Image (cartoon, one colour):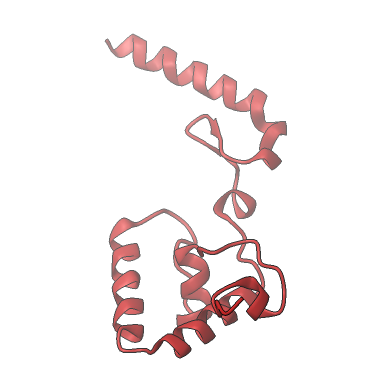
Length: 117
């Protein structure tokens, strides 16, 4: 096949075709964003930085960048780095052991919300 954007051309199997903004910023800008509280304004700012950095890049350079992102070590997700329970919702399969605690938090929150009404 002549498609140079395929995994065949890359030389190894890849799991992802899309990367998280955090992964891209860590590897292309050397900046760790989203290391704490989520900030959509910061996300937009870094998205624009990336856009302006690569907007005049050719197809070959963009493929080189993509291949580099594939070769970079995986960036841990938020739920892997922090607690996988947010607002009583378990956001990770790895956090199953927290399910009971999450239910308690959810019941407490629902009771508190009902008491306000």
